[in-house]
Image 1 (cartoon, rainbow, N blue to C red):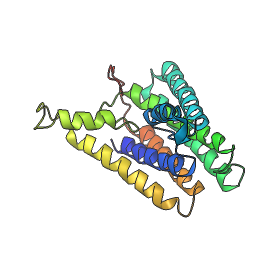
Image 2 (spheres, rainbow, N blue to C red):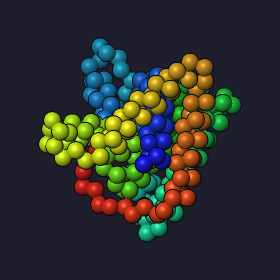
Image 3 (tube, helix red, strand yellow):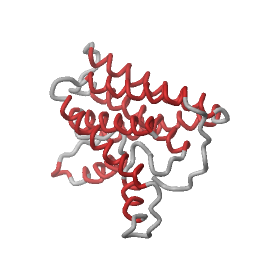
Length: 221
């Protein structure tokens, strides 16, 4: 649980980067990008079109990679998870280094490369966590988490399954976004680098922890 919450915090960081510095686009929350594209059809709002498309395309490619890794390595869950999250950490580290050295910048068309790298990493994360199937700790999508927290509560259906995990997921995402927004006042590369460190730590936890067993998940995030 701790490793997944760490990755949830990292998600808040990268979405703070993308939305606040890369042109009001999400790299982890594809629902937002689809909505933005719909809004862009009304020309008077002058919303960006290319950035959400690039984010979604890169996210899909990252998710495809996550699915392929699961297919070939899923028989050894620990090996699979460590490799998947290590790939994500490497992608984030590369992005942070390119930003720190000025090769990439949060301005002009080059911003699309940053968006693509971050969205690809998020797609890989989302696919891996989904296939791992912790239904109340998806690390990127909170709509289902909030629905479960409310619907399964004492005032709802009364099932009350693991509310602390759902609450922790929401609070951790909030904290990651808040910390990311605050740090962006002084450093962009540093925020992406922090996300890379957190994902690497999560990979380390999976490397040392008992091997998890993936379970079927028919839910829709």
